[in-house]
Image 1 (cartoon, helix red, strand yellow):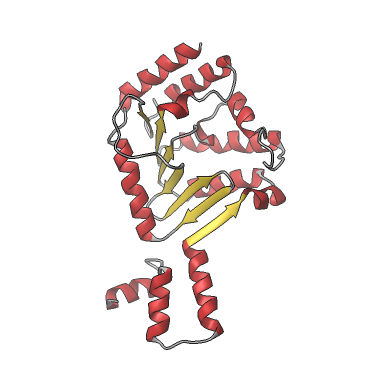
Image 2: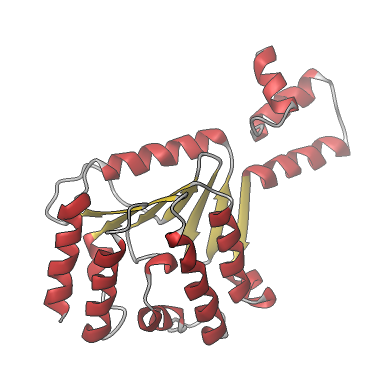
Length: 243
């Protein structure tokens, strides 16, 4: 391991991986319980999993406050959305349908309180100092989570938001050949943190290599997507289909 890397770890410029910590402990000939403790801390620092059950205990509305804090601490926020528009892009009626539990085992929630927090969080889209890029698949745009009337308004809302100067909405069309699969939703905050969504919760990744890899994934799909006026017109056409 180079002295430069050691220095960057010591000054907090990079986060050491679990392997990095193992190598340092071995070089320093550290043994016993302290090894297990430090490796446990390294794993937690690099991968932070939060289950929906934990969120349900503290209040699912609190997650919206946590996400708002992440948005406010970042200048460049990139969303990859293969399944559904994120809460930042949802109109109230659509969000209410999304937030209402429908699958057995999904924790109950105070839908109206979560909804209010989600709508308040959207104010940050008006902050011109922050740049938002959203990549959605065509499936995410068309997936019917609500009535046709609500879906028409939701998709039209996406088209309207895409006109903001600090917002780019890109669409990966089903007819476009794409030599990769969109496996999961994720958000990259600047170049420091990735948050990956799963059915059971979310995982936060802070290792610079994980962040860089997800940025590569994001750019790959962006290169295969409609952008600008083409994306806006596509969204308007889908809204007309629902309407």
